[in-house]
Length: 256
Image (cartoon, rainbow, N blue to C red; front, side, top):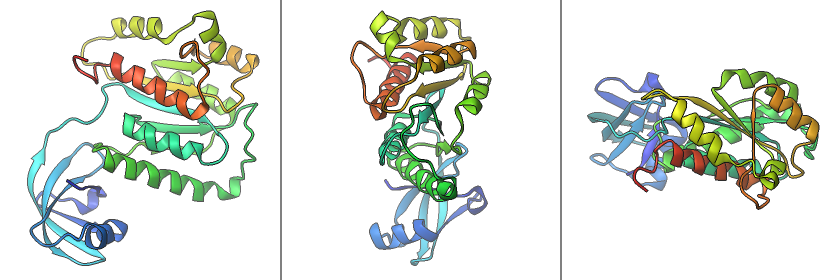
């Protein structure tokens, strides 16, 4: 069933409204009509089943017929910090990362970032990244839209490490030396109280990886340097690989 994220102001106790692109999507793409149902989410964890009462290309009005209780979010609140890669690779990371359960994305600049970042275009880029996150969250039946933060400097990123219970700094040299993710996650999980919802940061470098100096700075700022196996992963693969590992350790995959 089609799912839409709706601003809380448009979702009341008994009715909900779609406007703009969502209304046009419902009318022109889904060809919805009165009596059809959709799921509306306020982005804060409230999901409802709604039945359309009126529809045109600008506005869809619907009555709420049921509040849904399905949990679609990871217990661990995982943020992906991705050094800006070339081309549209960050869009792939955001789209697939949102599907995999990431709660937020923090792009940043590091020493080997190749992209010539233009701050004048930042607002437009962030709008596009947020649209991608929203569409991916709808497609994967998330209850929240992952947040997209402004592009940070490496110094600013280091300062953010203190906000998280665990910072995983993905560094290929650790993979070669046997410093893997499994032991770190097992120990971290064992230290958590029941029903904990820890904040975790995954830090991924650009195409050329991190420098030794950056790795040392990350470790000094509290990060755990981890390898993601013995193979070298592309930058757009690393975060998704780590997210899958975290989903498993958090119990997201049940008895698998």
